[in-house]
Image 1 (cartoon, helix red, strand yellow):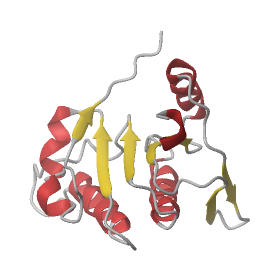
Image 2: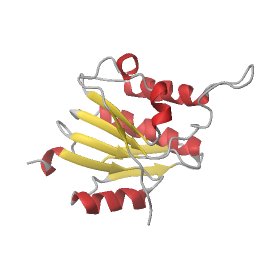
Image 3: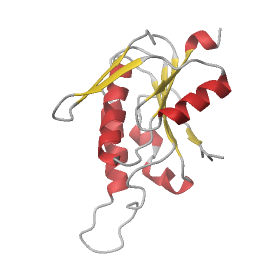
Amino acid sequence: MIKEHFKLISGTANRKLAEEVSKLLKVPLTPVEIKRFHDDEIYCRVLESVRGCDVYLIQPTSPDANLNLMELLIMIDALKRSSPDKITAVIPYYGYCRQDKKSKPREPITAKLIAKTIKKGSNTLYKPASFQVTISSSRLTILFPLLSLFPFAKTYNIIYYKYYHS
């Protein structure tokens, strides 16, 4: 019963990590079609129904941070349009996390900008659902004040996750 409502999805940033998590949990990766057009535009489509499921999307924003972040946002949007009960974005590496505070005048706080961008991407809802962000650093929790970022969610959680490759 649990496996029927539990979906694990991987982006292209670290497929190997997602495959290892899949083996540990004994849950197959949900098939996703991700392709790049000639101008590097990203296309994403979930190839299996996730309606009513708890979906875990593994997608770090490691180098190339911009490309992987855009893929994350597109995958979140594709999933939201597929009517899951809950989406958890597992982000083992949060790109732009070095820019989490202002140390000089006229500097951006890019980590907060990215957090707001993820919020905006997840606000394109067609029905209320729970959206969680899983990040790898407790220092970044200030960037995800969930009660204001995700006001539509039924639950508010941040899961701390570190992946240590042996």
